[in-house]
Image 1: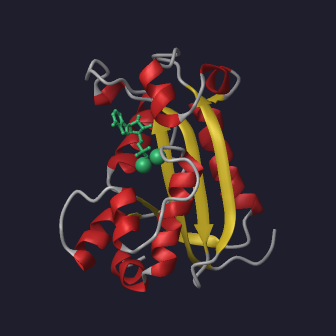
Image 2: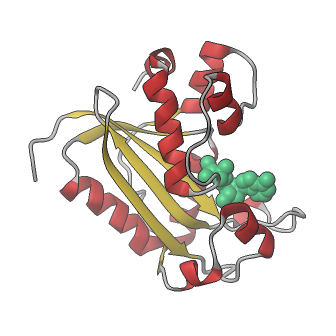
Length: 191
Ligand code: AMP
Ligand code: MG
Ligand code: MG
């Protein structure tokens, strides 16, 4: 392990089981993909992590979920369940990355709630001993408005989404692009 300094920011985006008719209550949604990007103090990407996760409560993905995310049944069927994936995230951060983050961040509060929900469901400790920052809230603080989607926020800063929308790693990388372009939003995180 190289020397660590607690100045980085870990950006995380989760994909989860879902449907389009509200038949899947939020409490039953399960993480099916973890995407994570580690930024250093200069906002350079210094690490990336991606894992599919096998859902246990609703193991069969809906067609809607596959259409939305591009994640297929075979991707999750062959994946580890959440406890192993969460341990993988924690181990990646602890053992392989060049810096240790001071905080983790996501677009909105959803990811923070979903992570806590899955930890409770599987009765495992929270894998991140870090404060959470809400990038969407920081963006709204700087640019005004409410309910910005990641795509709309990118468009507002004259950027296009790169990669596949609603995929964990690509979503996390695009959140990183906003923070790289917009130092005021980064500073508003207070990380
Ligand atoms: P996102 O990070 O925006 O891709 O969303 C995270 C998760 O929220 C997705 O994997 C879905 O489980 C759920 N989700 C996002 N958008 C929708 C939508 N339009 N309808 C139903 N569920 C959604
Ligand atoms: Mg998201
Ligand atoms: Mg996403």
